Length: 190
Image (tube, rainbow, N blue to C red; front, side):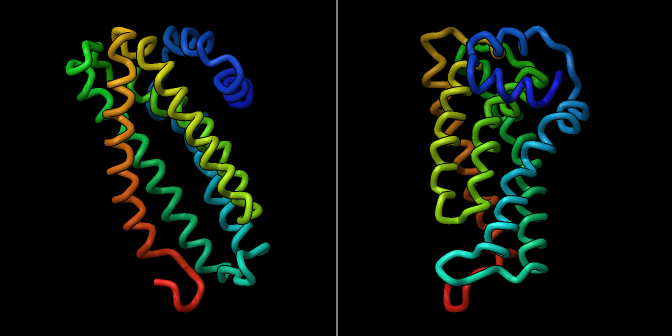
C-alpha cells in the first residue's frame, strides 16, 4: 500500500478502492505507521505553521505553545481513530454488519483520509473552513465503506453511518475539551 496512491484512489474512486481495501490484510501497527500517522500529522503541522507564522486576525500563536498544542492534538487524533474504530466494531451487530476489529480500523482510517488532507488549509487560517468541506466528504467515504468493509446491508448503511457520526462527534467534543486545555489563544479569549 502506497500512501499517496491510496489517498488519491480513496478520494477519486472510493467505491472501487473500498473493494481493494476489503481484500487487504494489514495489522493495526502497520496501518498506523504507514498511513494514519503521516496523514493525521497534516492538520496539526499546518495549524502550527499557520497560526505561528501567518496568524489569524493579527494574532500569532507563540511557537513553543503552538508546538505543545499541535502535539496534544496529534496524539488525541491518533487515539480517536482507535476509539472510533472500536465503536464501529461494537455497533456492527446492531446494523446487521459483521464485527471485525481490523475491518473497523481500516474503515475509520481510510474514511478519515479526506478530513486529514483538508487539514492542509490550516496553513492559511482564513482558509481553514475549507477543511470542513473535506471532513464532510469523509462522512461520504464512511458511508460508502460500511457495506463493503463491515458487510452491512446497504439499506442499513445510512443509519449505521449516522450513529457512527454521532459517536465521533461525542469523541470529538471530549478531544476538543482536552485540546482546549492545552491550546494557545489570543489574549482575552477563553
